[in-house]
Image 1: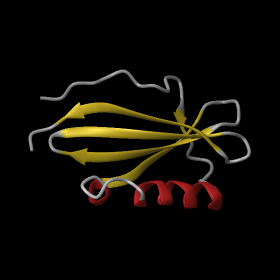
Image 2: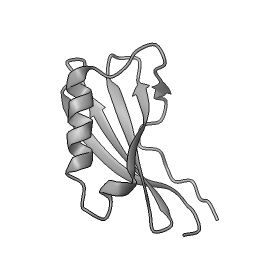
Image 3: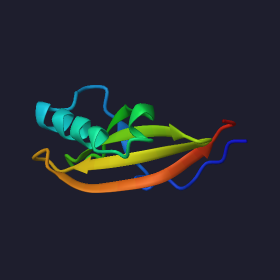
Image 4: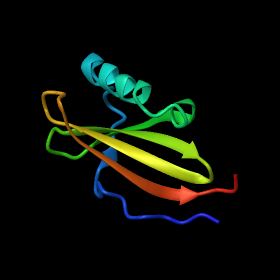
Amino acid sequence: MFANHTNPIPGWQADFNSEPSKAVEKDYQDYIQKLPPNEKPYASATSWLKDGTGQHAVTIEVDLNGTFWNHVLIYDKDDKRIKVTKFISGHYRS
């Protein structure tokens, strides 16, 4: 059974015209490395998003014990992380 939950960044869109800067890439890789040991092997960056104001976000999905967890790291125009949100995006049979 799959259930959608509220997306904490509605209106953001995939940014296919740019890639994360080296600073953002290093930051989200460090974030993944600092996840708990039971989550880290199942974590992967899945999308690069933009909001139209110059902010960007990286979505990291962690598939764990039947649950799809999304971690959203939000960056300002200067590539500084300003917020992290974690939410359940659905479920799967484990």
